[in-house]
Amino acid sequence: MRYNRRDMSESQRHLIKKYANRKLYDTATSRYITLEGISDLVRDGYDIQVVDRETGRDITPVILSQLVTTEERRTDFDALGVSRQERGQQLLHYVRDALNVPAALVGQEMERRRGDLESIVDVAIERAMSRLAIPSRRDVEKLSRRLDELSDRVDRLNGGHKRAAKSR
Image (cartoon, rainbow, N blue to C red; front, top):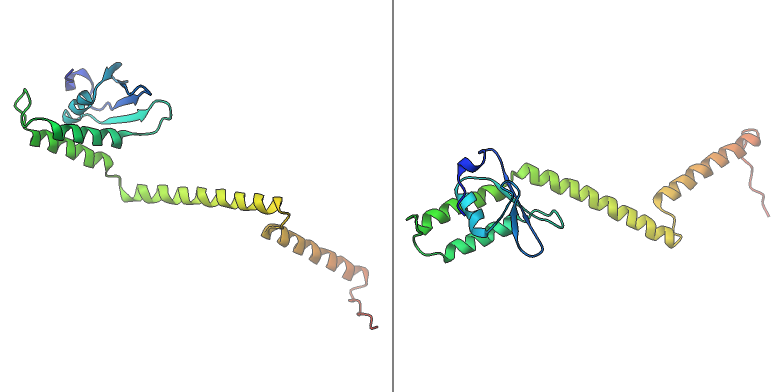
């Protein structure tokens, strides 16, 4: 089925869900859609996003690469007289735009994930050290502060004088 811009408002994105049985469902039109239908949407200038229904993972790049592969297999001209090169250029342009994420966003995401990973590693190390009864740096610092406090108390109890070491 061919989709026209009149079917939908131009600003609306087509969210397509891929089911376990490999069927694709276009939530914007409430209909099942084929790869060819998605290709038509892309050529008509619509934004699409394809997600795995079970995991919610964005699989748009996978579907777009399937579209490119499918386009390469087609004959030189379709029924409307549009050349394969024109179709391929439109699709390739869309794929590049869809996959071309600003570097700042990528950098921010990587920094966030690195922080998350560091936190996970820190917690895992603390747990392992705890199981092995090895004190962590925090534990050693806490014990050191407590030892300093006790030493100060002993000094105060002795009238501010440190005890002389007994000679034997």
